[in-house]
Image 1 (cartoon, one colour):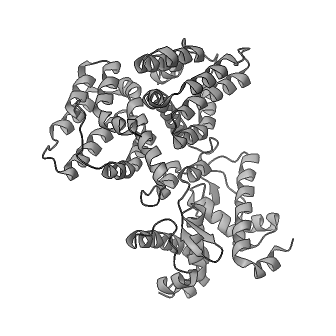
Image 2 (image 1 turned 180 degrees about the horizontal axis):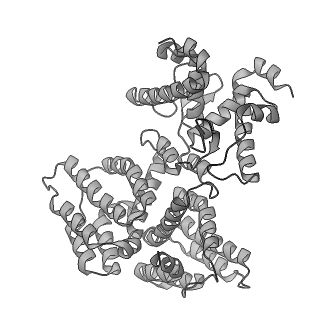
Image 3 (image 1 turned 90 degrees about the horizontal axis):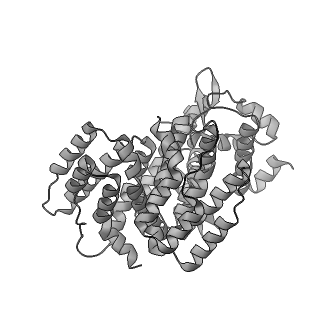
Length: 232
Length: 232
């Protein structure tokens, strides 16, 4: 197939399709050759020659992989296989304004699942220092009912809980899901209902209670949200 | 700045940088104009004129957004803002072979958090039909100790649990995390220890037990993994 001649006539579509194919071909090549992060990759022109496609097509495919963080270019060392920032790419498309409402709902539930599942890691890794910091956050909350401050309280308190699990990915994931959570909460009409168990109650459970107490407490804290799900 | 002249001298780097800028500029433009999925976007040449950059730069930025599923091109309707497949992009970079080992460990823990947090959604939405199907899966498991079959049992049983939550995103997320889970399990040296609570025990708890029983049962089932974390 004479790709160059064809792309003169059908440039736009042909380029996209070829870039898709080249992207996939390169991924397979990296796996087949067992490339590890840090390994040098063939030069652009070598790929062009081996694949028998235009330089532009190879460039587009490489650009995509670079955008995903899978490859990087270093001075004098050329192109290397890199460790992609797996959450970074997720973040690029996680915009509540353009996500399907059904998926927003799914992500909202996902956040509830994470909050409920945190307890085991939390009790494995909590320190007195962390609990003291969490208590400080809970004590400094303003309860004037202004929505802006309520959301701020939520973010500070629950963010700290994620941090206490010692799992950076989980923490970043939570930060990423915050806009989604805010968006869904806004959609719920009427007065914002607060669970019977407060942030300060949860701090006290962390101090003297058991993991099971904490799970029950977190459920009571999130109960208004679970009741919303119940109605659906 | 004369972008075209500059890119003759510094073609490669300049193109990437400009594409980054254009990508960001377009994202901001979509938000500022409150574009909704399905809305028609300006034509490529209009963007070229408005941004004052080369056509290639605009094309690269558009190609990235298309790759992320944020825009799509339809016959006769031109470019539209689309609903991105948020998990699809995540999946493209979630390859255990190139992910940082530290992040692999984080994702392994994330999976444990999800399993432990599932109970509330599960008890909200479980049906007799689902439990019967889950029981069938548990009864059909082969216990000959061959690792291949054990992993298969795990995937079938836990996959069904995620499915029973009625949350498609959660289910897809779990499927995506499976290779990570397999990878981490493989790294753990020595005999694979099975928790005291079996899949069939969990089925029976779903039939007659409480949510709290299920949480305790799932913890006992996953205990060997939590014990591994304890040692770290």
